[in-house]
Length: 261
Image (cartoon, rainbow, N blue to C red; front, side, top):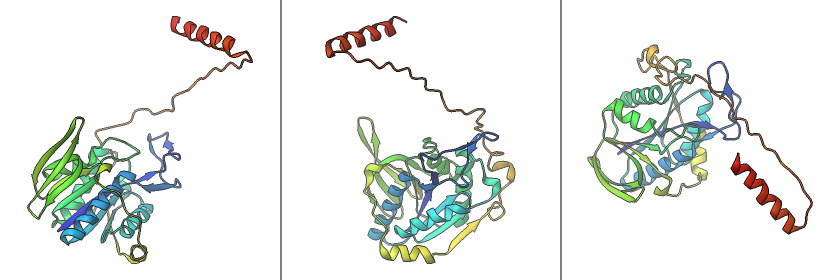
């Protein structure tokens, strides 16, 4: 069984910076981490490999620094790593991102299952997994909390719903987006860390994927950010030193005044 896991390197949530000219995230020089939701996809892929054999290929799109994230995936049990890196990919929205990832998966050709995390913490759209399925014309199920059974031809999964779960049978190859309830990710092993240092990194650019520049990055993104800003938070405080009963009366009075405005 060949499992492909799509990963994303995201800015540390306390370090997000925006380029005012393009309204896109500034990634160079910013501390980045493996998208936390993707660790559950990696763990599920490793568990499936342990149970059924095969190999795991991790794919990520981004600048050269994403290599660190892919090597982290190797330390967790991934076998092969592929980085999609080209300036033409920069500024891609979820449509252009899923298009590029799908092209890379199509280039690999032989696979049984594509796993993604529920969403990325920097965008929270949960659209890339379904986008990959759409571009490759594959069955797809989101918010999967358990893979009950799987072979090379079909899988039975539990899809998390607001009032419980649906039990879904799907033919393979397919795309599955998993939620954090599916497992508990393991820590890197010593052997995994050693493998991460020596693993061969394959790098593909737009020419390697035979893609047209008009379909990539900002050029190929139907979603365009017109403006982005940090909302202002104006807080007014009043410090008083009163006995508890009088302080309570003052608070009630202030709240009453606010509701009347």
